[in-house]
Image (cartoon, rainbow, N blue to C red; front, side):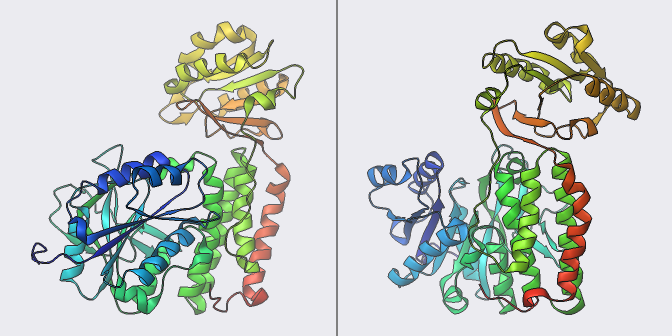
Length: 475
């Protein structure tokens, strides 16, 4: 269908929270876009940012409809705020275009989405092809599917995907609200998002809801937006609250959209998987992340939804080091790639506290860099084969070395070594590339003993339907 004859009215809804530079960049792109200005309205919902976002938008983009929430309502509450306003105040609007605040847009992104929707009147929503903003050859997804066998999701990334893929439109289970065009008439019939999700699984549930009502959910290969990779979100403190909401909301979703024996199997799988991740997080000296998985499962059984206060770990290394009169830190270097940046970071840390002593666990090829800092007796090396960290014998020697030495805490990259000798010790996880502390925490060995008990308790809650959890709970 040729859109040049008549362009339908589209209302853009953007939700932002403390990403002033990103949202300003996005608004500038929308001012220079391949869609008629008189057919495009823009609403920005600010989720109570503290970085001056609202002030900047008012000053630089006075024509934009700005809604300021008194609290951070998450993605679900933020998008709902914008969608409600449009549905009440824009009677001529045909489509709602939901956008993440940190996307970059191909100029034809919206035109291609609208073309798909106009050609498919039985479709409720259509999403864009999402490409890694740092690597244009990396397609993150073109829509995605819900895995009703394993209790998860799977991105639509055709094998040997090429940018020149001839297929224009894919029918999928859901599309991410990173760029999602929704038909207003369908939204009016089947409502906006479940606000009690706060964040995650809200757009997935929307897709499932529309499909259940008989609509198609589509993704356009010709509509392109650029977004940071999902993987980048797994190594900072945000992984704690992200995985809490993912765990809790996924359990609600499969409890709601499955039944009978399938429901028991899926909920059991999700709980078992989340418990496994909780144990892995604990072994990686990240007990707060481990607890986030447990909280997610527990809150599901207790029917607790909405925004959750989640504890975050210490991340001020300077402040942390002042707790010690004498410091001996253990530095772990997993490979040569980070050796140089880790060395620079060490000299920054050394300024915090005088008289810092060091022991080090490094690859053989990195010994020259650290031996002058530690001395010959305070360094141990290991061979590096592919991505493996040392042989079993070398790991045993390292554990013996660490057990004999007296040290206060481990300075490590985001994923520390899985060595029993670091249990009960504080671990400072460092993003050396960005020169930032992710967190400072320690392994709590008591949970390793309790984890089977937690799992059995959750399964018994399922079997006996504690709190009537297997009844459909409306959010």
